[in-house]
Image 1: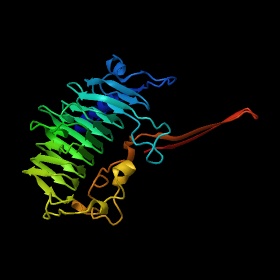
Image 2: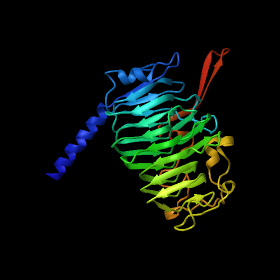
Image 3: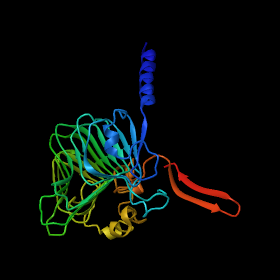
Image 4: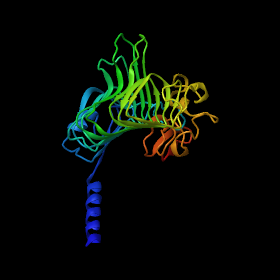
Length: 340
């Protein structure tokens, strides 16, 4: 009886996956896509819960998007010109503002550029994205709010630079009502050139592992392991803090933590000169094997390391060339691809 029930459940899952469809969105002229804008795809009655939307290179969504369907959204990645073998087309897929609202539970977004992100519902995964803004009017670049659970931010490049005389700005802000929050393997940078010290993280619960953090943080009721704190003042309350590396004394020296570490001894480069590959650890970095269970500290350590350029885990063409031989009336096409 149990075997029959198992087979029945498997059948339901398979039939559900079979019914899901994949849609293409591209605003680039001449591209044969299903929709020319993401909003038109979202509002279409044909696009339903469980579907996947590929948002292709060069597609920019300038209006605020309230996501109210369960979707998998996949873009081409970012920093495509900085790293080898990324995409043949180096343009990004960009969202000006994306809000996960009721009805979007179970959604995933990856490989996109997002200028402002609000998460107001449960069971959301945001991974492999470039989330950035300069002089955002809102108080937070990423807001996680409401009585919600199971929100995952992982392997994102989060960059918030405030070029105005405003204090109180926050990179990632979440309320005490959020449970099951996981923030792993992200680069989180906040900076204000007007001498204010914005928060990189202001969260009252959660699990924070293998991040690289530049900016002050206030974290409560959390687990904080295997991170690299490159700069900032930390206020940690009721938080387990183990196997972290800090540029000053934020984490102390107990429980495997290392203090007063020069960041020039940790990374091969910097964001300003090499984008995300500048955060790769030096061969003799003090972060090598310094995490719990012998893993590396920082974004390239742990069970699910950061991926350069946020490339989604689907095949991609990273090289395309066509050679026209008018004399022999022939066309030669060269394509190189990786499965990722």
